[in-house]
Each structure stands twice: as C-alpha cells, then as structure tokens.
Image 1 (cartoon, rainbow, N blue to C red):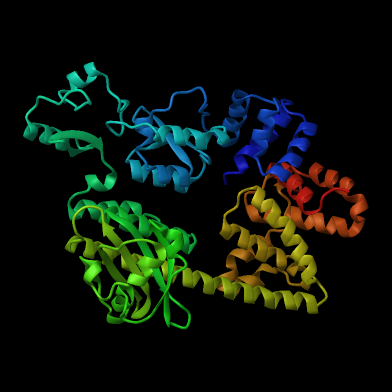
Image 2 (tube, rainbow, N blue to C red):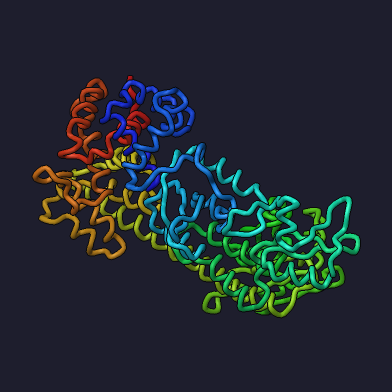
Length: 544
C-alpha cells in the first residue's frame, strides 16, 4: 500500500545512519498533531534533502526515483490521462521513453493503478517513485498548460514561426486569417484536437475535450466503457455513482447529471448524488413519488423520458427550479430497476448545445443499467458486512462465556491494529478484515487444534480465518521471512503483543515493553512495521 514505501524509506535511512531516531520521534509527534507526512516534516527540518529521500524511496519501492522539482515534466504526456484520473490515483505521466510511458505514482507498486493507466493511455507503464508532497502541485502545474496535441511536447502557445510552419493561420486581435474558411474548417477538423469557433465571421481554434472527439455512437460507447472501467470493483456507492454521472454529463454534453433514489418508505425521491450546477442545493430537495415530476413520472411509468422544453411540460417540477435558483430547459430521465424492483432515476439536464437526441436516450438507458448494478452491489456489500458482523458477534459471545476473551480486550486489540493499519494505508476492506479478526483473536485458546477452521466453516468469514490462523506464527523461520504468514496476521500479532504486554506490566512498563517488541522485529515480528507500529501505539496509548 501507498504508506509502506515512505515508512520503508525512513527505515532505510535509519539503518544507513542518514537519519537519527530522535529526529524521527520529534517528527512523529508533530505528524500526529498536524497530520502532515513524516517525510515532509523531516525534509523541511533539513534532516535530509530530496535526492537522499528519493534514493531511499527508490530502494524501498524497487523502481527509479523522479524529482518533480528538478526533472522535466511534459504537459503533453501528462494530459494523456484526465486531471480527474491523475488526482484520483494519484499519478502523473511525465515522459515517454523507449515506447513506455513514464509515470510518477504516489504508490508505484499499485498494480491495479498501473493496469488502469496502461488501459487508459494504451501504453506500457514505467513507474517512478517521488517525494509525494510534490505530486499535487506537479499535477496542478501540468494541467494548467494548454497544449495543441496530446502525447507530444508541443506547447499550445506556438510562436509565429511555428504557426507559419504548421500551415495554420490563427486570428489575433489585430488581424484575421487570409485563408479560405472551408479549408480552415477542414484543417481544424483533421487536426483532431481542436474545435472551430466562429468569432465575428472568422474561425478560431480552441482545444476540445475527449467527449467532443467522440462524435459517433460507437466512439461514445467506447468512451463510456473507458470511463466506467472498474465500476464493479470494490469501492463505495458514492464513487461508483460519481463515475456514472460524470460519464453521463460528458457523453450527453449536459450541464448537470444526478441520481435520485427512493426513500425507505417509497413515498419520496431524494437526490443521492449529483454533478454540475447547484449540486449542494439539489441534495436538500425531496420530491413526492407521483407523476407531477419528470423523475416520478419516469419511475412510475417505467419509461425513459426526453423533455425538449421543460418550461411548457407540466411534469417538470417548477418548484424545484425555484428552490435551487436554476432554470431547467431540457432533460432526459431514465428509470433505474434491478430485476423489476425500482431503485431510482438517472437524469441529465440542459444540453450544452442543441437538444437531447435518440443517442442520448440510448446512452442514458445504458447508464441507468450501470447505476442499477452499482446500487445493487452496494446493497449486497451492506448485507454481507452485516452478516459478517453478526457472525463475529456470535464468536465473541462464545469466547466471553467461555471466559477466554472479553469483548473489551478484543476492542483494545482492534484499536491498536486499526491504528497500525491506517498508518500503513490499508484499504477499507483490509481494515474491516483486521477489525473482525482482532475481535476473535483468542479462538486458539478454546482448545481447537485449528481454530481458524471454526471461522472457515462460515464462507463469509474465510478471509478472517486466514488472518487468525497465522496470528501466532513467527515472522521469520530459520532467519528468513515466512511467506505463509499473511500481512494482516503480522499486523495483528503486534497489536496482540502490545495489549498482552500492557496487561502484564501496566502503563508504568510501557517504554520497556515498546523496546522489547521493537527488538523482536526481524524475528518474531515484521521489521517493516517498526516505525508505523511505534506511531500507532503512541497515538492509541500515549506515553505518560
């Protein structure tokens, strides 16, 4: 995970005596109070420079380093992905070398991100590690540059000689191009990167976005497929709906898009998520489930509706426009169903240019189906999580009634384990597994030969069983790390050792206990967890 690399890099600097532990301890305290990354605090304090950091980070990540402060970033190659994708991963393409796209990533070991970038850019990816606090500013700078062509090093602001060589004449404030207008329009179209804008009878060129390059239904379907990649991957419903709505707005070229959901009692529709204008105001609106709104009419009649003139359509809620200070001119509403069950409505409003057409209706129906999948996946995930929690509660009762492990002890182990997991940047799913395993970590004391088998009999807890089953296994066997010990088991082992130790020594023996556990890192415990473990226990059980 992304937090592993900085922490491993710090451990490398400590081992190489290029960083002292007292400076690290001071930085840890400041990081806890300010929330800033350790490496940023240490670099700003002059404990090391960027090059020293990049050398250690490169060794930790197993990929070359890239200094965003001193090395050149090509804005043209940077924009082979959208800014939204760059900020979401986070990642920034910086150059193309030997047929590969060189990309700086916050976590260059994230295989899912690398595969996604390769699919989006249609290039093999050569990852680079960097000093992560530099990355947001580098993304901002790269996407603030206007360029003529994606995947080249040509700036948008060409010189007069460059313009002359290109064979394209641009209008300026003092002159107009003496070129045949039909020829100019043809040239702009063939460039594939600009749109024609008529100004005072002349045609100027300006950059166009990905949606404007996708003109045919087939091209737009391909665009949808790219934007909705990973919609069925793990993630929360808001992220999935956001991807769907941004795709709807992009492909239909609308001012806004939204998803309305049914209330629990199925008497109202409320805005679950929206992008575009007046989103904050929209989220406060609730509509009665009747045919007096386009959304209500659409879901009750199970029809996709296209409204070309909302001002004269009685189904358009004028009250909503008044409440949010917005004028709806046109819209498309597509009902969202899963196996006949109504879930909500997908809408796009106000076509940027022209009117919504049959293609827009078809795209909205496709996206409504995707919305149904996203909502249903979220419902199934909630049901599975609820079942897992209930099953773990049964085991907690068993442990408590057998006087093996109290719920309070499980809670303490979970707190330390989760604090350590958060320092490591674990995913939400991994943190949930860790939490559940911590609450039943003493199953081996029930006398079962293989306590994990008790959990494994419940299929939904098989992943938790794997964590508990290897909890007591040492990190290293015969001086080498044991690959059979899962990472979450290694994390949980430290949390259990800490709570068990405090039960023996009390808080008065806290510092000695911490030293003993850190000394065991490399044999009993994973040495890569030393720094994050120290940070976690200082946060959960501070000294003094």
